[in-house]
Image 1 (cartoon, rainbow, N blue to C red):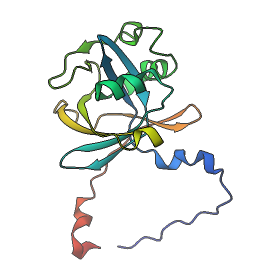
Image 2 (cartoon, helix red, strand yellow; image 1 turned 90 degrees about the vertical axis):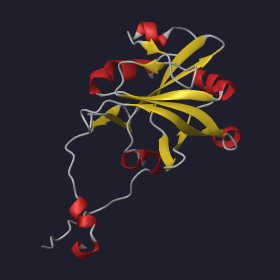
Image 3 (cartoon, one colour; image 1 turned 90 degrees about the horizontal axis):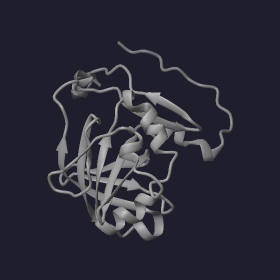
Image 4 (cartoon, rainbow, N blue to C red; image 1 turned 30 degrees about the horizontal axis):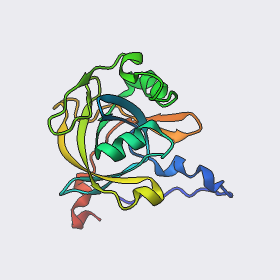
Amino acid sequence: MHTIAKTYKKKDFPVHMIRRFLEPGPILLVSSCWRGKTNLMTMGWHTVLEFSPSLVGCMISSGSHSFDMIRKSRECVLNVPTTNLMRQVIGIGNVHGDKIDKFEKFHLTPQNGTYVHAPIVKECYANLECKLHDDRLVSKYNFFIFEVVKAHAPASPKYPETIHYTGDGVFMLSGKHVNYQKFFKKENL
């Protein structure tokens, strides 16, 4: 069965707003630790780079408190929040970590990681402990390449409702998941 693909009448679109189309990954809460101090930041700019070893690229603004903590400690935890943490995600993204303890302010529970000193956020759906794998792009682009050295996630739900930022204060929530595995067979294309 073939369906006719819908076409769209297009107009010029502001290039500074294209993030709305390209940021499908979930918002993360990045936790860090340096010299006994911890911090959390909200992050949306990340991408999977490799499966084995498991590499993730993250853009962290040099103006953030987390930037120096992560650069010096060479580790962090990428925590995956679900929609029930929306207020915390927004709040954490709008306050500076050198002024307050974000775990305390936003009522989140830090837990010890297995391989890193940065805390895991207990309330998040998944926690990915990371070590800095490659820092060659940090000075020029603020782009860190991390290796996930340990992952923590529950068995259920398999597809949690995650938060995705599209810019200008607008979020998208993950929705219905559809299995199209049958179309991956060559004869069905």
